Image (cartoon, rainbow, N blue to C red):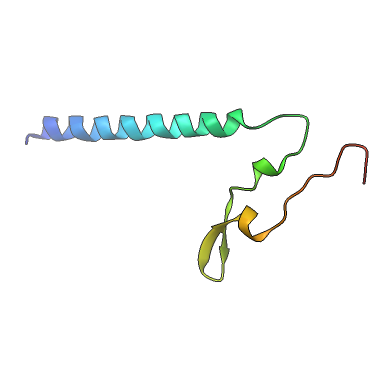
Length: 70
């Protein structure tokens, strides 16, 4: 395999990974609704609990109070 062939393989792999990252980001941002707080903004965050990473929603109850109520 020549250097040019290897370069093309690396570029192709990088392009595929970047496309997947962009698609994932679009899906995440598509779920965001502006103007109102939502647990969806943080429920998939991963946190370290006793040496293991878990999603925040598995260890915490997430809720948002209704507008106008405290």
